[in-house]
Length: 399
Ligand SMILES: *Cc1c(COP(=O)(O)O)cnc(C)c1O
Image (tube, rainbow, N blue to C red; front, top):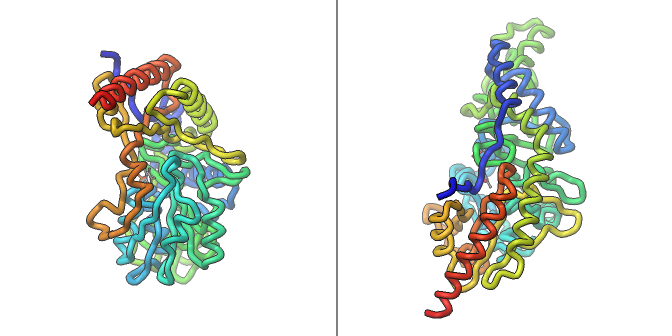
């Protein structure tokens, strides 16, 4: 058998290694100047002020911080599409709030503004959406709905690191945005995340919640600690002891470090090239799989939207999805489905009935898409998907 083609794969190489070596040689591997540089570069990439972004050790940590900053708690409802990542459901439920799941479009797996609106109540404190597959979806319309209804919007932009609507970055439409740089994403720091907070006061609290709730450089000082040394610098200016600190919340530690941030800065400089290749792969699948009986390719993003092409999904007729997935696996092509429907996970205690999400979850399959796929890999995936679909559909129809 040929080597297995992965569904996702990072692209880490000599430039990242050189950046790590440089951090090792600096003798400072903790959170410091390189983390500040990565935050500033990421803020530029988003088109926001660097004082409004805080790096974290994961997207999930950033989501937990977002829920704390919004004051989500018992009695509150937080709306999210049932096609969402469990870390988000946990961030809501861990604060004693109730996750309320909405339906999604059957073809895009993203919710419309109407899907969100259908489940808003007077107890809704916030809405958390993602951008399925990296396609922005109705983020602009949902942001407008949330503003009109006085509900906070958090964007889980883990899949949308380079996605935009009319030039504006996904993750910056709502009140907060969170990103993931874990091993399976496009921009990979091995593990890491980022939090954007629009409100300046909440933005200033975010780095403190990410670091034990500490206010460094002596009590009663406002710490917009973009850099590890800011407490020290402030303390020197104000002649207090730089090792003093105060506690403003009972928080854990969600910070990252200069080793991972140095990798992040290199990856960010390569992001355009990564996404361009993913776009090519998506177009090749669109063309190679167009018109295959029993199979539908995903809708293209509408005019004005750019996608990060984090996922490429196809949908099967005739109930053959699981069989095709197994056949492809046996032929060395790894596929998957994201995300198992959240309202079906018992721990969240939902009794929602969401028929379009159910239909989508029963027929959707994610094909390999990453920037390291060669043209030969793409051709092989196309040929095998065509072959397996025809074989399984033939058998399903004969039965
Ligand atoms: C990966 C992922 C996350 C979590 O990211 P971590 O950095 O691993 O915590 C959150 N949301 C979505 C949609 C993801 O795919």
